[in-house]
Length: 222
Length: 222
DNA sequence: CGTCTCTTTGACAGCATTCAACGTGTGTGG
DNA sequence: CCACACACGTTGAATGCTGTCAAAGAGACG
Image 1 (cartoon, helix red, strand yellow):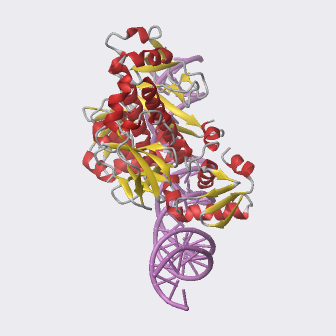
Image 2 (cartoon, chains in turn blue, brown, orange, red):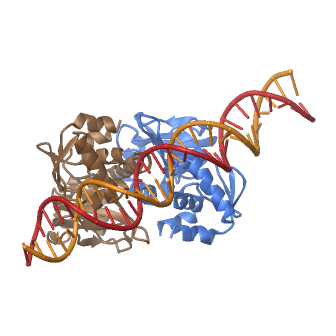
Image 3 (cartoon, chains in turn blue, purple, red, orange):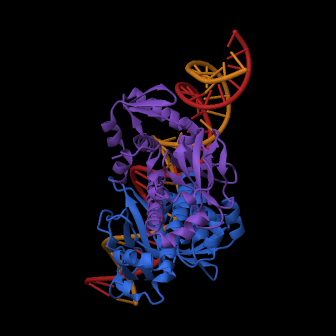
């Protein structure tokens, strides 16, 4: 159900995405300065930082992730154009954000939005809506991580990806995909290769994937 | 950080929990009738149901979970006394809830709360706070499921559990623990047995666990 | 005391990881 | 323009962790 809604979306990992239109529409005062540019792999913020700002993606793709002390990484979500990320209630960030590709972001002041919300019913509603969508997304991700095989994980990922003319253009590396799915880079690669041998997909190059048999992919995830 | 905060809490799986004090304090009108009683393993609501009500635990323990079509189950969270669960923004439930033990719940009308929120700044704030805590909890759970070994998962679970005099009293079965951690019941059992051999814990009976060496458990999860 | 369910333990299999080598594509400098 | 370096990705072999299947043990309840 959420998956179907997600598939019609236009962002890399739609599950976690949500727009907050209320940030447009005459509320430009909430913006914190001009558009900010980040280069590939540049850190946008880190876990533990003070959470003064949050962001909306104008172009490019962003990942949010958590790390264990030994370096293991779990990517929580990818965010594409229009998506909002980095909104927190506590003072401190609970995860890190990095640019997957070069990207442009608009920043908003958390305190400004929080202050405006009580007098702005639409903003307030969308804030809650955003948060609840994030919950649903994270819970879906937990089901994926806890109870699906490697092949199922990769299939879910592919079906979440935005399509342009039947082609998936991946902004992220195999390592990113692996860390999103809780797998190793080798397993992701092997699984994709097997899917290509099974004629479910075609991989003209590492950053492009063609869905040759979407129905079979959907059958894979039951 | 969230783990430390969680450890001081008093609910089975504190990560997902949040109280919403605003539901007391002169807002009794939001309640939907008297306390409801549910027997062990009784369904409280199911994924896809209409989401008219949400609940607060008075006594007992509740689990929320998702199912795959072949029956695989992922428990998203456990809720104990004081915790709120089942609040949704959409019309349909995105997960199921069941009674882990016999329990008493207070129900609230979602529409009532949504209607009251715009005119009630405290309620509105706590609603958002609740949602954001749920997000953080689910993201922590994703890290656990995606990037930790069986031993680490069990250690995290034990350290999340509420302690009474150094004793954990488990309301849930091994199967529940397994489905929360993304493991099998056998792996959970084996891991606990190994921890007992290693003198990290003691297991006088299946529903009680003594933490003999909490520091070692904490070292386990780095 | 027997039955039933839940839990533990054992043996084995299999899937994903690990370690290692080999391709592939891109960018740079000769 | 080509050659090389380097990062990224793919493939192979072997290990090992966790799952699967099976059986035995432990409590709870009638």
